[in-house]
Image (cartoon, rainbow, N blue to C red; front, side):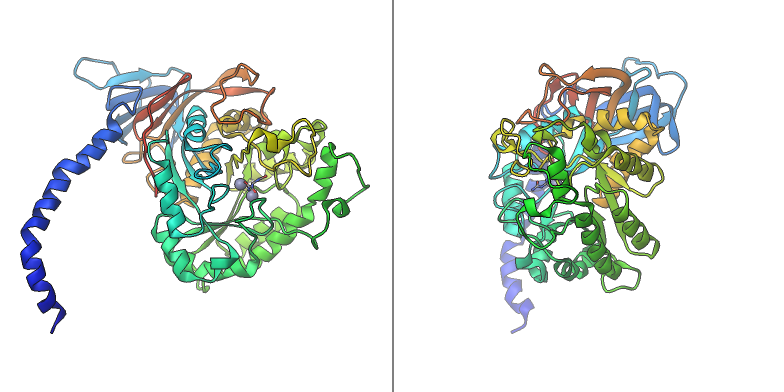
Length: 510
Ligand SMILES: NC(=O)NC(NC(N)=O)C(=O)[O-]
Ligand SMILES: [Zn+2]
Ligand SMILES: [Zn+2]
């Protein structure tokens, strides 16, 4: 009996009900979701409006433009010396004068830690902080949620956990661990479930259920990533032969547990350089015609702008599909300025000296580093051991998602960075990495993801400053920055304005 013979009677019986269901679903249910998304999801009652300022970052450069938004999309970007008139029956005009209007930031390296470690962060507080920081989309790392996201089921569970709790667009990286690194089915299921790419660590991650992968494990995943045209993001440190960190000191031994130098000595540049050397070796498979042509390798949180960066530059020049990010904290802080016991500055790889910071800025400005992220990696306050101040024992991770824009602007503008350059590093380049073609620039048809901010407004992050992420321990505390966020729009919904958040918008990028 042919399959058709089997199906025909079945289908004949079901055709009318199926048809009714489909029509019904389309006419009734879908708009209901749209309605739910729209109901109260914006501080602005209008769904058709015009933003204007003298400094709009467009693909034609920065200048006086109006940006017309209708629904979730940008419908026009028009150069004009004056704001359009706000006339009855015409879309409302929001004139932001000399403030900057630019694409919302896209932070492709955040740890929101939900489900499972909501006491560390969570979708609600993490995305509130992001919206307040002018960030309109994040891509969440597969750790430090519990379970870590290494299978399709884990990802589906995480997506469910995010429902009703997010203020901006959220996407997800899947995790690559040794157990599944050579299992194409598991990896394809994860990508089919919506993971925007994969993430792996070449050293212990600090989370037991996210073990380190070798370069060979990473190499095994590349053909699957090539099939999907997706990246793998890699934490680029390999540990010298395992031993007590105290024995790994480079330079003169430092006994004081509260000394930042002791921590810095324990994670030498050689850890990054060796990891990237191994990684760039396997990244050769991504070259045109290679076995993994179409896959992409992305080095996260580069801290060393010397030996490590030169290997990455060489790999790019030889045709490997490679990009590299650095983080706002490596650009904002220097080892010499980190006080004894100040474990809020602990991250891995570590913040290095001011000479290296200048080299990171030079590499960014020279186009050798492709983008910037926050690597917002909070924990509970107790895990930071602020009293004890023991850098080796404290949790490694800096909370900073809300302050990435002002920190980048303050330190970058002092080094000749333009607003357009900052916009490229924080929006267009991350949109490309995460394969989000409708995001990253202000153009016709793109998502209306917009941040309006004032480069000349300065503020001190002190005990009174409204911090929205869950545990208010941050390396940015006590510092003064310029570049204040005025308002943030996500797909046309005003989600933040001067300290006010709209109800959740519950949108996902998967
Ligand atoms: N498990 C983590 O969140 N680790 C993170 N911690 C840092 N960067 O200190 C990271 O990105 O490696
Ligand atoms: Zn990392
Ligand atoms: Zn991270």
